[in-house]
Image (tube, rainbow, N blue to C red):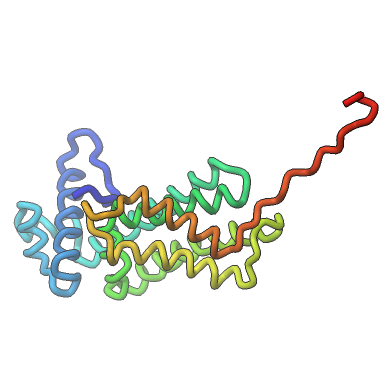
Length: 218
């Protein structure tokens, strides 16, 4: 399972390696049984560790869910920021951001499902932090739509609702995507990018006409 669990082992630090193993085990267990159906013992067994070892690194299983959720949201935001930085035109930015967003929810489908569908299990403080990360992502998407509207290439009557619609489409990929199916993450990303441009009624500006100069003798 290749998911963005957030922590990368540094050198041969045994403690860091143990934390990574526990995060991966928690992700697998939460995905299979759900947060409330998973016990600390389940996580310990999946990690090949004792239940007591879990508490050395994570005081509660909720802390594991929080770490997974925070890592997932930061990874998505980082990919979106990188996509924005690669382009200057509004349509190119929106296309690339949506492509990255949808493709990530396919490639990291297990983590994405856990992050999206187990949020209610987070403690209030952790839930507030994750909600703030989600608002940042929504704000970025709204800004892209407003920039395109101001540039005269998008027609968007309600940027907040349209931004939520585009993000919701990408998030839902995690619900139905299955590895090895008909559509690859790359194909999904490309198709969702095209649909996003349709939603904002993208109309590229025509290049300025060139009048032939009589003085040139042409």
